[in-house]
Amino acid sequence: MIDIFVINLESSVERKQHIIEQLDALQTQFHVFPAVNGRDPEQKILAMYNDGLSQAYRCKSLSKGQLGCYASHYLLWQKCVELNKPIIILEDDIVFDKQNFTEFYNLAPKLDAKYECIRLFANHRRKVSVKNIETIDKLTINRSSKGHMRGMGYFLTPNGAKKFLQHSKQWYMAVDIYMDRFWINGVEPYGIDPILLTVDPSFDSDIGYEKNAKRLITTRCRREYFNFIENVKRIIHNLKFAVKHKLNKG
Image (tube, rainbow, N blue to C red; front, side, top):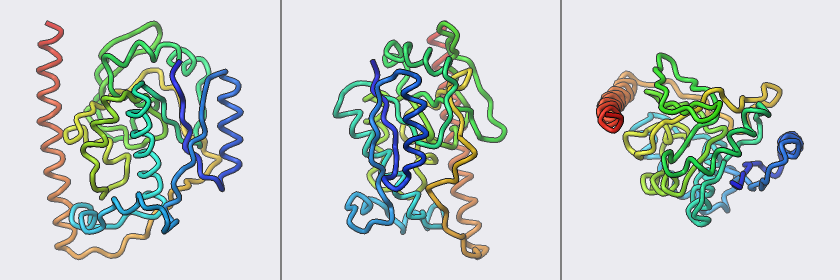
């Protein structure tokens, strides 16, 4: 069966208990993975963050919580490669659909040959189009025209993990935004229907966000230009994928 890794800060005891109770009820194998504390100066992995690039491209810095979140996911990508088998990565503030998650958990070992990464939650982007790719039993794999915007839970193969790592030599954006740049990292934005999990609204985010300073007009223009280029690259990639998918089906 596929190993499940739950990202949890040592101080987040209530979250840990919350997720363990759910996974115990699902009767699945899982590991609690100690999250990186982005506020800990002793965490050497945080040196991968490049604030200069963050300012150049995003015109803002990542918060300490965002850095810890990136580092935690990054280490699990490495773990996936090390194990050389698919894993499921979960954050600790989620609620499962018990039946749907169980069906996917049993189905997942059959998926690694086709799908490098599958988000297990709803796409939170605006104006996104979703195309169904394949229905297996009661679950449908789909592909979105935009990334899902969060990293709360996903299925990941070693090939997908290698791609995430390859294009993540320096960090300058939040990890979910980086994962959504499929035209850069080559990991397609697959999702699933019906969704398997949602965020538990009773928990506040552990990440935390820095207050944005008032931006100069030149700064705003630079950020808008970066976003424009990103959109163009995404559209081109989606067109290429559509052509390739049509040829493969034909």
